[in-house]
Length: 454
Image 1 (cartoon, rainbow, N blue to C red):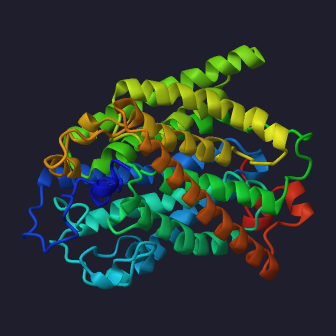
Image 2: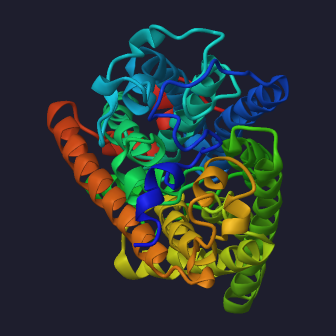
Image 3: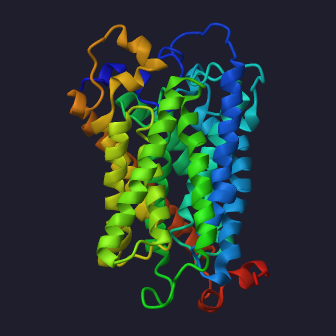
């Protein structure tokens, strides 16, 4: 495959670092105040995506007596994963690339347990112009939102205790290894040459597949699909979607890890793809159902954000338009027709939007990736000195990249799907996954948290 020899330099998403950073002892790092300021801002933006963004987005879509339970999950996951990340998860995902003991293909090591050895003036090989604590915090926000996305699939029916246990284990044995394989220069998918700029595989396919497995293992909501499961407050969901959209600039443009040209292009294509996907979804919905809905346009926007995520640092605006339109149409049918045909109860379409959208985005990244965009900054520039005629995506003549992307998608689906299934089965056997039928019928807010909204 054309990119095989360049894989260590090209594969990982947030690749502002030089391609040989892991191979030799680097010179003393030069921390950029501008890059650091942008990454501090991006970190806050991505955290905002979970609280309050995702909490409101999901909270508005459930029934009134489950709103507090829904927003509680997002808030509690933020707290839980923060602790896990600082304790051991960051080390498992991003332990120092220069440490031979941590240079595994599928998991990191323990050089950063409890953030040991982290120098506030030092840097990570993947982000040589910002302090490592900033890089650590930025990656933490990705680790937070990914499991929070899963909760939309099993909304209205999972025990809070079971959810906490599941998220703890899932973060350690699913999220951390996938993040390592894709974004660490020694990772298996990184070496393979998979392109994932900001988390199409790591975040969205990962969360979407876990959501699908969870809703299948736990089972359908009582009364589904005949009972009324209409969203109780779409204003909350629209506000949440809007916060997700704004926060996503930190998600995608921040993944350049510098305040440079690649961040600017990532921001541009994110805006374009999101708008195109929202319009594509709502126009198809209008044609099929006779009316354009608020739920439809915000779902389409989120699908666009999802699909452009892996491509944001590799495609131009033409690619962004194509990805946005394609995912808007495909995710509309996956969240409606496909779900109905197969009969699974993905409550808030975590799989239909994030799983399917992530797969579409990952594959189309291999189609529309352009070397002129990837070469605007970072690892590509140095690599291209030895290969000036390198082609990145299918439209440039590198059909092999699409195959590589499919391999990355397949690996993520299998790893996540199998381990998620095993974890859920064990938890169900030990403490049970699902609330009692009476609790589910009367609502989770009072039964699980002793509170209600009025």
